[in-house]
Length: 121
Image (cartoon, rainbow, N blue to C red; front, side, top):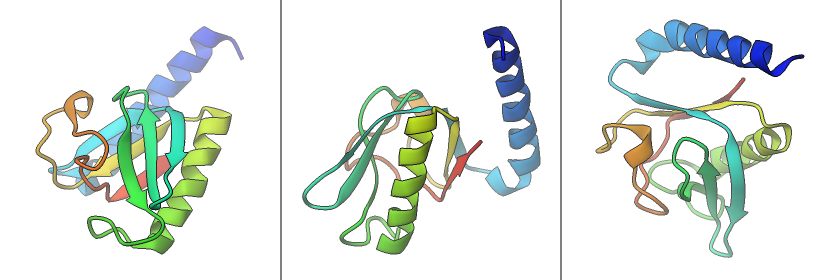
């Protein structure tokens, strides 16, 4: 598939996803892009470096609940994030409550807000 067609398709899918999710996303911050890097620390933190932030953010923790995200959900997100990184598909992280006004200025590492959903498309 030509790169220009792929970009147009991505834009269309993003707009459709946002339109369909709008009621569910009311009052939330939605961050979309690719997962560039993943690290899993010895303490269980799952960190990603998404294209929309360009810095490490903590997604969750596989050893202990982190900001209300259970470990079993974190393990699922770890597999999903790894798959997204390998295939370079786009992800959408939804944040129900955040101090950041945009995805680009969200807190980093452990000061990142807790996501409520991770979508790949």
